[in-house]
Length: 233
Image (cartoon, rainbow, N blue to C red; front, side, top):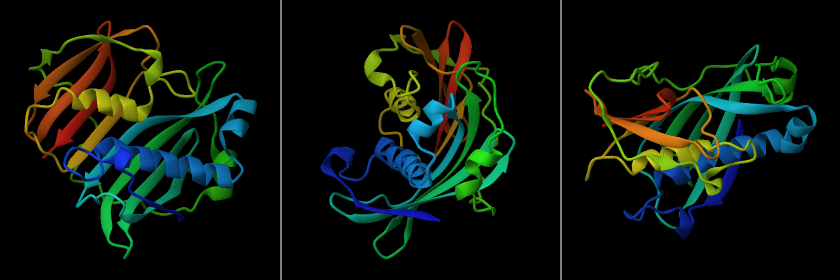
C-alpha cells in the first residue's frame, strides 16, 4: 500500500467548506501518479515507451469529507492486472486513520501510436500487490443511458481542460458534469464510465436524466457516448 501524507488546502474546498469532489478525485489521481513515479514508471517512462494509462472506470463512496487544513492520508494499491487492464483502489483517511472516502478504478494501458491496448503485466510488476479491491457491490457495475433523458446546453472542449494525454482530464469531466446537477442535490457515491476521450475542438452535448439511484450526466459528441456519470444518493 502506497501512502501520501498531506493537508487539505483552501483551493481544494467546496462552498460547504469541506474537500470538494473534484479535489478528492485529484488526490486519488495524484497519489496513483506519485506511486508510479516512485516505482520508476512515471510520465517520462510512459512517454518514452509510447504508452499511456487511460482511465476506464471509477467507483467512489463518500463519507465525512475533511475541512480546511486537516491532516489527511491518501492511499493507493494496484491490486490486479490482466493483460492491458489494471485495477487500482484508493482511500482517503484522517490523521487517526479513519476512512473518509474510498475508491476503485480500472485503467487500460494503450499504445499511443496506434490507440490499441497493450500488455501491462511487466509495467505493473514493480508495484503490483495482488489482492482484493473495496466492496463496490452496491454501486452499478455498468452505466446505461436512461431511455428518458434531456439534452443540456452544448459546450466546446477548450485547451484549459486538457492533460498530458491531450484530452479532457478525467477529473475535469466530472467537474463539467457537476454543473448540471439539480439544485440542492446531494449524493454519497459516484460511478463513472469512460468510453471515448473528449478532444480539443469538439462540441460536447450533455444528456441529463433522473434515475432510481440519483442523477445521471452523460457527455456525448455527435451522438457518441464519451463519459457516463451517475451521482448516487
